[in-house]
Length: 136
Image 1: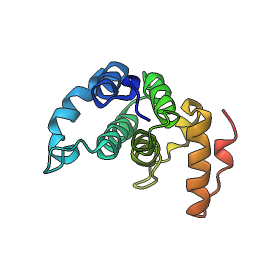
Image 2 (image 1 turned 30 degrees about the vertical axis):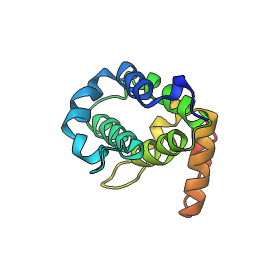
Image 3 (image 1 turned 90 degrees about the vertical axis):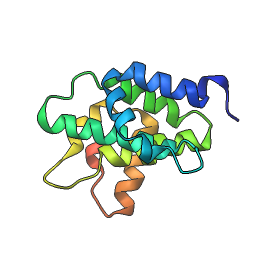
């Protein structure tokens, strides 16, 4: 059941409050996360945020991301199926996707228990070692 706390407007406002630098990428990529029928595709929006975080960590220290990861942990436990999927599948898979020499393990210290559990499962599905998720 969706509560006011997890309404679409509130979710987007909370995202922008947690990471104000996401405003420009949100506007720039709007055609990706707004479908042809006007539906907001939260999984794509959260995936875009994950990509922004990922790109930012390639060029600088992961400063100021704690509030974003805290918010994603809250969304993961929201009880709203779409918001939970967006937080875990959209955001987490985008941030923690290996490739191009990117190793996201240094961000594990920012994970909450729900995100950690999801990523352990995700790593096992892909046949990857998940012990890096055991330490904080």
